Length: 457
Image (cartoon, rainbow, N blue to C red; front, side, top):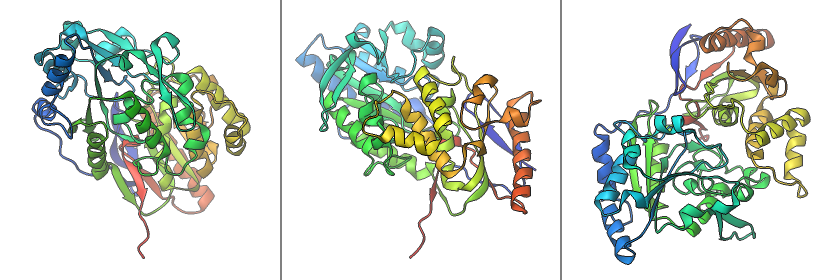
């Protein structure tokens, strides 16, 4: 056995895997040695838009009482909002130096359909200097009709309802992390508005069954991706004065800061991301070991770690997924649970036929169950070995997949659970195949994306 590091963001530990395992890390990339200097420089020299101070001056000249909104992600993303690489305080500090009073700057948490964060979670995520400034802080509530306003309709006629605090602000700034995204191609940019600030009843515009059934709605793909294209259209309608997006390496260190125009600054960040997050692969494997990373705060989010394994999996292979769930509900919301129960009861084919039927009434969060079907089209659900200690064992009876605790009931730690699940899978595959199984490990979980090499002509 050889030793690797399993880094789940909140925790990490050494993991023993078979000696013959092929390991597929993200590419090498340099991190920024002076993050704050780079952040302030990006704000002074943005891509295709006015420098932040000039932008603020111009807005205040037009309206001395102008209000600003700074959109931030919630804690399901490892956005550096505090510490030496924190992007939030330098941004707000420059806005205040440009003439905006702190009371006129609102922080808006783009929670999408996620639950609101509590005070403890916010203080853990944000720079303490932000709280000392006394900035108003608002959580987007996708179900509160009083906080939602229409900005128009899509070409298909769907009404776009987004957060009123954003729409009614004169200065609009988006912040976030650009990482691979299994539906939109990449996070950040336009996604802070859609889905971050969208009404729950408008989510079907981006996450309905047919749109997610597109082969282009996948990691690191923007061109032809209907989720990306619709999200960008919505964001353009809502308006944005500047984005401040970052890229990170596998150790969550800052590799790039991209401030500027909604579209061009985001494209620049995606180019940077692709340069090291895309992992070219040539072979398929009998056993693939992955993990849910920082984002895997619950089972809902862990789908991202499962789907990046697909290009490496042979038909009927085994996939081991490790996850450390820190959310108050380690599974997810009521709609997600409802849809995962249906998926387990109906099976992949019948479930997909159901949500693609024109008569189907869209259910928020059905999209995550739909994404799990991509894995189960490749391998049967029982071949997903799910390693987590936080999910109640009684819930495992209806969650598709095999609870690793049924294989290793005596495991006392996640490390032991994963290692002994690997040993079980290798032994099981030797028996099934009559040979030593081919094994692959994705050390970066959902952040490193295997891309199948195209055959040479």
